Image (cartoon, rainbow, N blue to C red; front, side, top):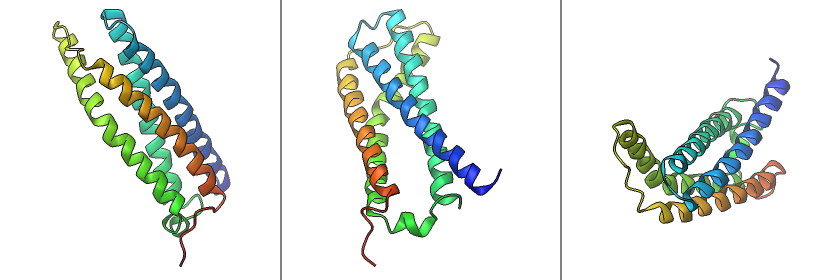
Amino acid sequence: MSGPALSAVLSALHLLAMGLGLVSLRGRGLALAGPLDAPGRQQLLRHDNAWGLAAALWVGTGLARAFGGVEKGLDFYMASGAFHLKMGLFALVLVLELWPMITFLRWRFDIACGREPDTRRARAFLWINRVEAVVVVLMVFVASFMARGLGMLPR
């Protein structure tokens, strides 16, 4: 695949990953707000899986675009304040996601072992989920500014 075609495919996949991420966060939030009985937990974990898939696709395509030589190049990204802000927002999502991610992995283990997971922290995870969704939307705006060269750092 040629450079421009690869760039276009990676860009499209990156955008689709953001869409999938937002949809999965919405679904995960609805599940967290509802009853966390067996069907509710199944719905939650299904949306959490989609969120994980979106994150993997997002990170993979982002790394390829920023550092794979198919986009604007490393110099552009390193000189972009908007890129640094976007990465800071991304780091915030990662930090926010640690507690729910570890907990949902424990829930999966408990369910697999036939135990009831401890869902008492679901309300906290709902708030984290909402904050993550807002941060992802902010990242879309920052990325749009970055793509147009706005926010370049002085040399």
